[in-house]
Each structure stands twice: as C-alpha cells, then as structure tokens.
Image 1 (cartoon, rainbow, N blue to C red):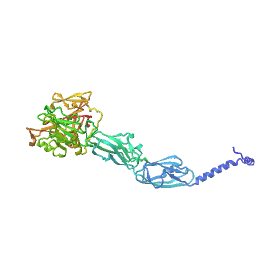
Image 2 (cartoon, rainbow, N blue to C red):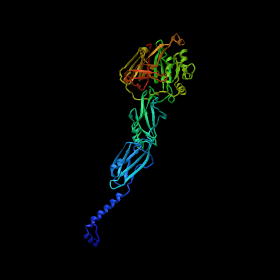
Image 3 (cartoon, one colour):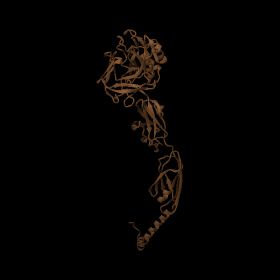
Image 4 (cartoon, rainbow, N blue to C red):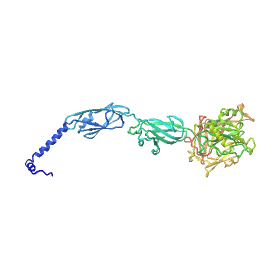
Amino acid sequence: MPRFPPILTQRLRRRWWLLPLALLAAVLVVGARTATAPLSVGATVPDGDQQVARTTAIDFTFNQDMNEPSVRQGVSIDPAAPFTLAQINPRHFLFKPQLEPDTTYHVHLAGLRKAIGLGGLTYAFSFHTEPAPKITGLSLEGAPLSDGQQAVPLRGTLAITFSQPMDASHVPILVDGAPVDATSIRWDPTSTTASVPISLAHSRLHSVSVPQQALNRRHDPLLADWKVGFTTMIQVPSAGSTARIGSGYGPVIIQIENSGQPTVRPQSGMQQADMIYEYISEYGIPRLTAVYWHPPTSLIGPVRSCRLITVQLEQMYHGMIYCSGANDFVLGQVWKYPNIVYDYAYWLPIMFRTDARAAPHNVMARPDQVTQRTAAALGPLPYDVAPAHPDAPLPGAVPATDIALPQHGAIWRYNASAKEYFKWQDGAPFTNAGTGQVHAKTVIVEHVRSRIDTTPGNFFHHYYTEYYELAGEGSAEIYSDGGVIHATWRHPDRTVPVVYYGPDGNPVDLNTGLTWVHVIGSDQ
C-alpha cells in the first residue's frame, strides 16, 4: 500500500468518490487513442522479394486487434491461387497460398477493419517465387546416363545433380524402387550433387528415381517424381581373379586339342581358364576353346587349329585368338580380323613346339606372351566380367550330381565337399598338367543347331568341319552346386555374349569358378 503525505491522505479521505471517476477517465482516454490510432500491418515477405519459396507461409501482424471477417474477406492474391487463412490471435494471421514456381504474385489487403473503433486498411505487396528444384544431370563414373540407355556398367558411383542446393535430410534416392541407405549418399560442398555407389544385376532393366517430396534448402519440393530407366550390360562368369589382361580389355582365346592321341593328354593351362567351350570338330573328336580374362601363368596347349566356332566366340567375347593354322575356308573367316588372330606359323615368339610331346600335338602358348599381345591390341569390352562373389543358388534347381555327355565322351561328378564338378573323359579322370583332375564350378550343356559346312574350301584332309549356330535362341541345362535348372539361352546379337535365362525368366547369375560349356549340335 503506497504511503501518501498526511495532507493528501486527508483530502483523499474526504473525496474518495472521485477516484473511480479518475480511473474511468484514464481508460476512456487510452481507448480513444487506440480507436483513433492508424491501423498498420507487417508481412514476413517483403515487397519485391524475388526468391520466395513455393512453400512459404506469410505472417500478417497488425498493430491492433482486427475484425476477423473483414480480414478473411479482404485478402486476395493475383494470379488467383488457393489459400488458407488462419487466425493465430486477434492481431496475427497466417496466410498460406498454393504457389507456382517462377511466378510473380500480387497480394492485396482491402477493406480490413479494426475490432474496436473506426478506420480500415488497404495494403499491397508483390513477390516472385523461385524456380522449382529439378534434376539437371545424371552420370555413372563420370559418363552421362540417360533414360532408356543400354549396356550400362554394373558398378560405379552414380551422381545426381540438382539445380539448387538441396536439404540432404529430405532427398530420398531410390534404386529399383528401394530407398538407398542415407548414410551411403555423399553430397558435394554445394549440396547440389549426390553421389551413390551402386552394384547392379546384369542384363536387366533398372531404375533410379527421386520422389517429388525431395526438398531444397528452402523446403521447396520437386515439381514431379523423377525417374530414369536403363538396361545393364551383359555379364560373363569368371574364375574370380582380380588380375585382368590390360585394364578392362578382351580375353585370350586359345584352341586346345582334346583328341585321344597318347601325347595330347594331359593338357596344360585348362584349369586356369575362366570359361572353356567343348564341341566336336570332326569325326566325333572333341576340341576345346579356352577363354581367359585374367592372365594365365602356365603354358597352354597343345594348341591346335581354329574351327568355324572360334570366329563366333571371338565375335562374342572380343578376344584375341591363338591357334595353329586351320583349313583354307576357316582361315579365310578368321583372317577377316587380322588384328585379333595369332597363328603359330607366323608368331613363333608367342608359341613354340616342345620336345616333350610329339608333333603335331606339341605347340604350346607362352602365358606371358599371349597376355602382352592381347593387352596391347584390344580395346575396352562391351560387357562385364563378374568379380568373385558368394555362391547363389540356381533358381528352381533340382538335385543333379552326375552329368553324362556321351556326345563328347565326358562324365562330370559332383564333389559336395569341394562344391565342384569333376570331369572324366573316355572312362578316365580328365587331368590338367600340374593341377590334377579338371573341375568346374558350373557346367552348361547348350543345345544349338549345327551342320557340316560343305563349302569347298572347308574340305581338308578328307573331311568337312562342323558349323555351330551360336546366335538365336535355344535350350540349355545349367549345373552348379549339385543342382540343375532347365534354362533358355538367348543370343540375338553376335557382338555381345550369350545370356542364360532361368525358369523364372530372369538372367542367371553364374557362380565364381571355371565355367565349362558343352556345345551340343543338332540339325533339328
């Protein structure tokens, strides 16, 4: 309680009835001032702003309590846009229009009235919204990647470039419809490029997408979902070595004899191969074509003559052929590609005749020489070579531990502890010099159309050689890990490898290890 001077206290006691009147007068004075004060408003978007986010909500703050209906009726925007207007309190309203990108808007406040007293307000301001963020570039390992692109590499770093700095925590990236782990995404310092490591399955349609809700730093979203689809390149199986012949270069392709002559077996260099094709050359005699994507380290042979199938394998794998002659017709086909064939008759440093075997079964290829020649002559591959990877079960496989191939005089038996098939030939273990019995991770029996090619030039030493049609489509059995599936091979383009499709219709991913392909011909 305030203490007043005695004289004043006595006067107040005599005139106590004047106090309420004084207080009432003070209130009326303040009310009159408020009722007559000019009405004003402030907006959180200044007039002339050129970089307004489309998601912006505009606060209107008045200096006096407002008549809410007048505010709701008095706010308009041009061009017309749907909006909401929420009253936070009598002096604060939240205006939320649905804005388009890169557009100039004019906001008008007209006929707004105060809650108490007379007087209104007319107010206007303009602003321009920023362009919507968009994706301006997509690349894989620095090479542009476009929608519908074919033969896209399976691995690498995918880079997505945006037109504006993005809010990294609000930019979901999807590969084949599945969100990428956000911790694996790396953004550049400007927050405009996101880098994502990818590893994709071969020979399939894949997609990369960013949904519309991806936000820039001002929380503007994309205008629409973004998606790019592409098909990955074909993949060939390998024995899993990390060494390569050159840097992504073509394989060594060597013709190896497989007749029953006493000095032919055991052959050398077979177990190091990534793939081996076996087929009948003539008179029921099988022959081998070995394919190496990694440098061999042992002698390879005995090297024998090319056959018509060799040319098709070269076209598929873009390798370099090493052989010891052929008949005139086959040589004519092979020498259409003089830069990719080396014949013993012309390149003695690469191949030589050993005294350990009887001629003509004694031509051997030097591993260092074939590696150097191949790496120096050939360019990048249009397909992928599979790296080492854990075994994957064949889709829909049924148990199969024995493979009988009477056409080639061969039997394969599955060794469960080694998880490989071991080969017998003509009733005896089929061995490779220095490594023992030949074993393969995968054995493929590929059924193709074939015929004896009776072209006159193909007649040599009283026989014609066989022609196998590797292009087109046909059936195959694939054996791996003690199981077999009935597959379909498709090879519509001779310039890329064949693809095997499982019962589920998807390309088969072959396991790491030697893949042995028996080509079984038929005139049907």
